[in-house]
Each structure stands twice: as structure tokens, then as C-alpha cells.
Image (cartoon, rainbow over all chains, first blue to last red; front, top):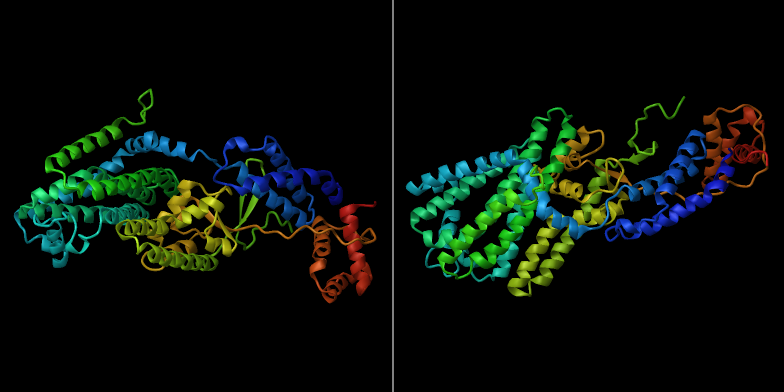
Length: 328
Length: 233
């Protein structure tokens, strides 16, 4: 068939498809699957056929280019996921996230060990030797920590400099700082996991050291009630971010039966679920830290709330999103 | 020579779709992507300035909103735009778009992966790790792209199709191979973009076949192209 006959015969199909694509491309985020025109897949397959023919018959570059652009646009509209954002978020929290953590529990345990062991060791040592903390942090940082949790500090958990800031301001600060740390812990995993291991280890040492040191100074009534409330969400989320980083690192170091690039992609796809969950947990932790931990409630109440939070979180990770057959 | 088979030194990547056809994706190199990033950086700097300028006057809540905005700008600025139309404003300005490596639009998790991993790509300074990864990889992917399975490609922008100039149909005097036919049609399509002199120059190079020179040669070849696309009608 000569090119011009070909064009004349199918022009209407192409125009119709083009029109449908124009409409679909206008609102990418809001659209749901129901809005897809019924004959779009059929028109698209027809177009693919025409594109292949036009190439095989060496029709003119402009026609081939036009059909290729149309094919690409159709491909993008047909093979995409649409809408239901809220529903996907809810199923993510209700089942995907805890199920994915259970599936990757080994990485979580390794990350936990990397974080907890140095924390306990250094923390325990700092309780007996109150000069050791100065080997970990600069003098300025140590005195800042002391200032934050000194019993005569009216605003526990803040330096004098920040004491005038409202709870809201601290909420913003915790989001900016803590979620950023979580994300970075994950991102560094692509450097063969070394960055993640280092971050977990370092955070373990510093957090353990500070806790041990402040306990040895006898600031227990200010430090522990303050940190206990958000500890469940915050510490667990950092370890989960670490687990996600280790998953990517595993893909780099030991790809197994996959090619290295495929392994990295596969592992990152699995890990991102954990990162998103950890981000949400850190958001919750920031809220608790700013408005609950910093409040003037009696220490007993704060301890009870902290224990309840820990228990609820552990139950959530054990039971949420299990299938009826208990496989997940 | 068969064009389809010979590997060209080219940055076009092909992906075969379930319909059995090959999509062609033209990859973007480090330089154009650096330009896009610079534009984005400028926009972000302006956003940072605006946010801190406005919310500095609203006390504690203002500081909170400001820090949350900083957080969102730092991590989610590219994600939001990539989900909305496939490219951050800088990329859009440079005519680039982010895609999955199978030619479908970038998904939420892929976009998140590639943008969180910027933190690693940036190391040790100014995307050195990312550049190294791009140069070692045949698809110009930085670490974030590798992990997310995404490509940064040029957005396809085509010229409108033009009707071939009306010319008297002429049958070519010799048998033409498919590729030769293709070249003749391509010449006819490009004619409106060429100057008169260049048209004549190119057409005259076929003197041994057409036996014509000057604008007569152009008309002759347009006639062949018309015969090839239209037939004897």
C-alpha cells in the first residue's frame, strides 16, 4: 500500500486516539481507572500495528515519527497506575508496611544489633566513667546536653537558646531533622551498605553515651520521662530505615542469582516500603516529642504512656496485615 | 546496509512493548541534566527565600511551618513534580522527562527512591558519585536511577506533519532499494526547511539518474517522491 492511501485510510483512527490521549493527559493525578475510554486499548493496539507497518514499509520519517510519538503517549496512558491514593495509603499502613517488615525481619534484626549493641555497651560504660563521653562528643555538645536535661531547666529537652521556641517550632524542627536522618540512613545504603552501618553505629554510640552519661549525673527524672514517650516510634523508625539501607547494600554486595543492577533495583523496591513507613513513624514521633514529651505532665503518666506505646507498636508489627491463612 | 540491525553510536535505547513494537527513548546526558538541576536549584533557593521571608513573622507556628516547608522542599520537590507531569521545572525547561525503564510514567515509589538517593549521589561533593555512575553506565543513570529503574530521556517533540509539495508524478527510471526510496521521500519532506540553493545542490547530485540540473532536478525528485508515496493516481 502506498503511503498516502495508508494515511487516508487510518487518519481517523489516529485522530480519535490523539483526542483521547489529549484528554487523559490533562489530569494525571486525579484520574481513576473508570474514566478510561472503552475503546482506548483497541485503538492503541491498532496504532501499534500501523506503526510497525509504517516502519517495515519504510514510509516517510515524518509519518513514522508521528506514529511513534502517538504510540509512546498511548503506552504511557495505558500502562500506568491511577488514583485511589487515599486507599493505597490506608492499606499501606494497615497491612503493607508491617507485612513487609516481617518479611524482611533479618535485616531489621541486623540493624537493631548494629544500633543497640554499641548503645548498651557505650551507655553502660558511660554510667561508670563520666569522662568517657568527652571522647565521643565535643565539650560544647556535652554541655548542651547537660543544659537540656538539667533539673532546674524550666523547659526540659531544650537548650536555653531554644527554650523560648514554642512546641510548634520544635515540631517543625523534629520533622526537618529526624525524618531527614531517617532518609539519609536509607540513602547511604547504596554505598555497599557501609554508610548505613556507619550511621546506625554512630547513632547507637551517641544516643547510648548521652543516656548513660546523663543517668550517671542523676538527671534521671528529667531525661528518661522526656525521651520515653517518643522513644518507641523514633528509635524503631531509625532502625527500620537502617534495615532498608542494609537491604539495598545487600543488593550491591551479594546480588545472588540476579545481575547486580537487577538486585539493587529489586532490593530498593522492597526497601522503599520500609522507608515510607519509617518516615510516617518519625512524623508521629515528632508530634509526640514536641507536644507530649515536652508537656508538664507527671512523670508517672509519661512512663505509663510510653509503655503502652511500645506494646501497641510491637503488637502492630506482629499482627497487623496478616492474611487469613497467617502466611504473611 | 540494514539500518535496523546495525548498532549505531547513539543514545537511543529501545524497549519492546507487549504489543511487539519497539519504543525509542533518547537518553539525556550529564551536561543537560546538570543544567536542569541548576535551574531547579535556583527555583528552590527562591522558594527557601520566600518561605523564610514570609513565615518569619508568625512566631512559633510560623517557624514550624517554615521548617516543615524546608523539609518538603529538600526531599519532595522533585517527587511532586515528577508525579504530576514527569519532570521537575528544571527538567521541563530543558525538555527532559523521567520515565521507568520500560517507557511507562515514573511511579510514586520509583520517584521516591531516585530522589531520596540524591543524598548518596551528591557525595562527596556536587553529585560526584552520581556523575561517576552516569559515566560508567550505558544508560546515563545515576545511583538513584539505578536503584529506582528510571531513565531521564528527552521529551518527544515532533514537528507537525506536512503534506508533500504537489508535484507531477514521475516514475523513477531505475529500480530503487527500499532505503533509497526512503531517502527520496525524506528529501521531499525536508524541502520546505531547505533554501532554494540547497535544494538544487542536493537534487543535482543525482544528475546521473535524473539527467537534469537546477530547479528541474528538484521537481524531478519531488515527482519521484510523489510516485513513491502516492502511486500512479
